[in-house]
Image (cartoon, rainbow, N blue to C red; front, top):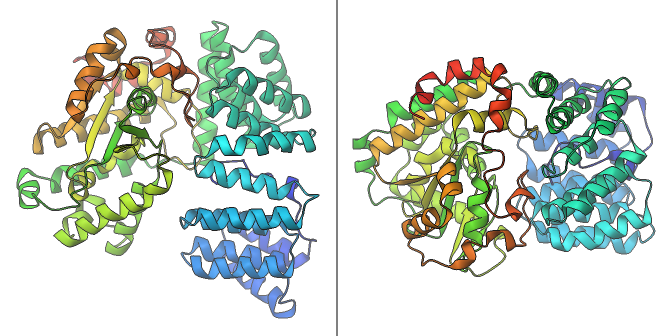
Length: 536
């Protein structure tokens, strides 16, 4: 149950306002957790059953790492105010985060039973199911929601996202357009429509967005408007206006989700210094012996969703999508080692048992996303390239596929994509170029210390000769060739990435040269990638 704006508080309702609660809310918006906590505890000292105060205090507890306390506070809030929808939503989200999705679903089912006339329990349930990648189960509930509350913009948007994941692109577009009929100034709905990728935006859409922008002050909404306008102008062949909007969008996103350029550089340098051939040799045989994980890593917009779709079409492989489990594992390792420790340095301190336990913990935490008994599963989180050394240490028999695309094509595609605020990603061409360069440096170093461990698949070669590349990939994975992999576009599994519509078509070269239309504005990117481009 994550995302930037999937939960609309107005759709659920909130507790009656109180001056102390208002002050606490302002403190929270200013990230003054201590001040907010003082205010909330003051309120609870005189009104111990104030459910909204309990709910807000639970948020602070969770932020500061006290999940058990947060859970109890939320359960108390629900006990005192059984109709406080936001408390149910927060508790369901927490339970999912704690990998207790069955409890979250039971919670929502009880709320549905006790509040049969309300829509909020149904909406919360769709959030839980979506978080668990059970979009097919959520779809009938989305349909009931828009039937019961046809004037609720957020419900049409959520319905559109579900339809997109299931490959029903035309219906998804209609759902987003319904949301826009209700709220023409909703930037998230405009980006939802633009992000369908295969849907072309017209001159009328551009005029509507530009008109709506005059009345939108919210930076988050304006960011999505400009990404959508970038797509729309590009569809119309107006590449100067398209690039200008992408540039504005990235500048706005950088203001609300700052990116730490130096952190990636330091991470890579720490790996190069720490992960040496002798380091790898000393740890040979360590880690969990399981071999069922396949990691697809690389840059965003590199073709990784296509590769996952191809492999998921094989009867022995299940695609689980982009999982955050490895990132959570890394956060825990660093937390125990000290906040100033790099993951490479922290991993160097782990003994054989700890490495094995971490590998097993990763497998246990990802099991919830597996929907079949297939032999292998895929974790397709592109940014896991940052933890490729850890993968090799904790799961030495896991397969790792590095999907690589032409640097300019890949970086421009990333520059023109709105990423969730949960995703730390650069917002200028210079930063994206350095990010790509650091990624290549990391993979080159890992090739040096552990030759042959990572299988590199080039997107352009896959497009040019699909069968040859697919056969080579399957052979590396130790899998027999299956013709279904060539017919991957017939695979109807849910897909939760921007490429959901694109990978439901046969392989084609459309878009490979898209970057050339923007080449006049790519000089900063080319400067950062100078040495890499000489090898292309």
